[in-house]
Image (tube, rainbow, N blue to C red; front, side, top):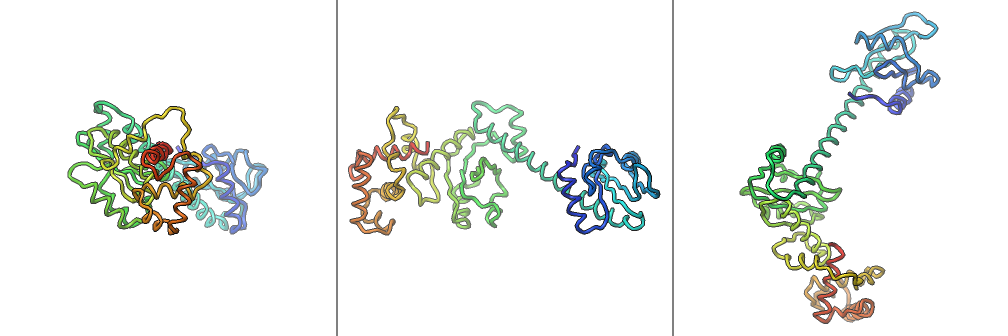
Length: 342
C-alpha cells in the first residue's frame, strides 16, 4: 500500500498554507502527524485523526482540548485504502471547505505518484524481459513463450531486430510502431522486433522519412531473437565507426566489417588512439573511408581544399604510423576504428 512520506507531506503543507490562512496537519495511516505548519507537532499522534481512520469519516473537533484543537479531520482514501488524514485547525464551519480542497489535492498527488510507480515497475519488467531474451540461447520454455505473448511476441516465428538510436518517441511517426513490440534497451536505444509478413525495410524507410536524427541498424531474420540483435548491434557499431552519415545500415551489407571488428589483435595499441586529441583528423579518416578513399569526394564532404586533405592524410600517417593512402595500411586503420566500437 502507498504511504505518504514526511517530505511529501511537509511540501504539501507548506504549499497549501501559502493560500489557506489556517494551520494544516497531514497524518499518516496510523494517525501520526508527518507534516504541519506547527513543526513541533510532527511525530505526535493526532487523536481525531486516529478516530477518522477508524471510522472512515470526517471527525470534527468542536472544543479545544489539551491535545486537540478545533478543526476538521478527513481521511485520505485512495481506492479503498485509508492512507492518511488531512486536518485543518479552526472553526469547523470555516475550515471545512478548505479541508475538502486540501484532501482532493493530496489524493491527486498520491494517485499520480502511484501511477508513476506502476509505470516504472512495468518498464522495469519490460527491460528485464528483453534483456533476458537477448541473452537466451536454446529452445524457449513455455513460461518465456507465455510472457512474450503478453508483449505481442510469438516466439515460434522468426524475428528481425531493428536497432534504433536517436529515436524521438514524441514524434508523430512513433504511431508507425504501434503494431510492433518495442523495447527501450538504454536511454537512447530502442529495439523493434519484426515478425511475420511485416517488412523491416518499409518500416525503416517510413521512420527515416519522419525522424532525421534517427539511425537504424537491421539484423537478419533469425530463429533466435538474440542472434538478430547481435547482428543489428554490430552493424550499428560499423555505422558509428565508419559510416557517420548513414541513417540506415543492414548487417547483410557489412557482415565482413562486423566480423573484422571482433578480430583480436592482441595487446597492440590501436593506431587510431593517437588521433584522440585530433578530432579533425579522426573525422577526416572516417569520411575518407566512407568515401572509398576518393580524394575529391572526401574533400567535398569536408568542405576543404584537396591540398588541405593531403596535409591531413599526411599528418594521420605521421601520428599513427599507418598511411591511409596505402591500401593495406588503410585496412589496419579501418580495423582500429571498428575496434573502438566493439
